[in-house]
Length: 137
Image 1 (cartoon, rainbow, N blue to C red):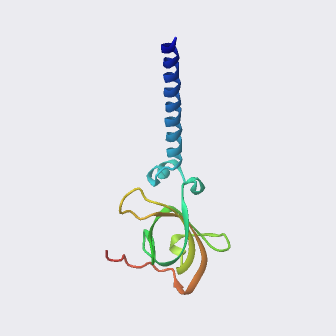
Image 2 (image 1 turned 135 degrees about the vertical axis):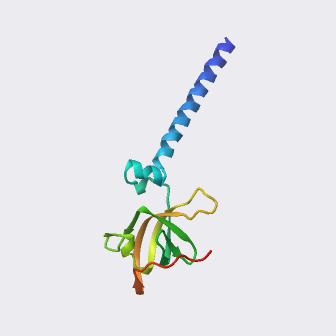
Image 3 (image 1 turned 45 degrees about the vertical axis):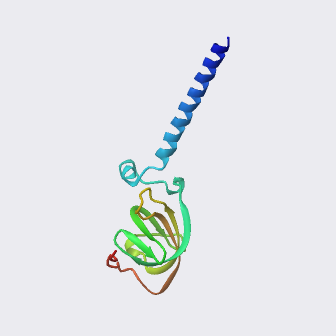
């Protein structure tokens, strides 16, 4: 009788583990990488596990934005939103500017965090939409 009960308990535990594993796969699919997003349509930025930080963007390069503290990677899916709520292109972003940057940390050791949404709060005096040369590392 005990053997039957233990066997049933093991089957239930294994079933629960399989269900949890399947749920983790579904959750991981919600945080698909950029390469997958390019093939499956645009990203739903609100569904990504992101952080927010308020910083002054000092310069922009063709694939990143630089602040005094961090460098953020910019992708085709990165949104740039003005104070009035209008979307602008990366090309039209004027720097320096104060912004709230919604980002996702990179999985790599030396990779920059990826900026998904940049809410521009205030554009600095003398701001320009010109790109900077890549900084020497």
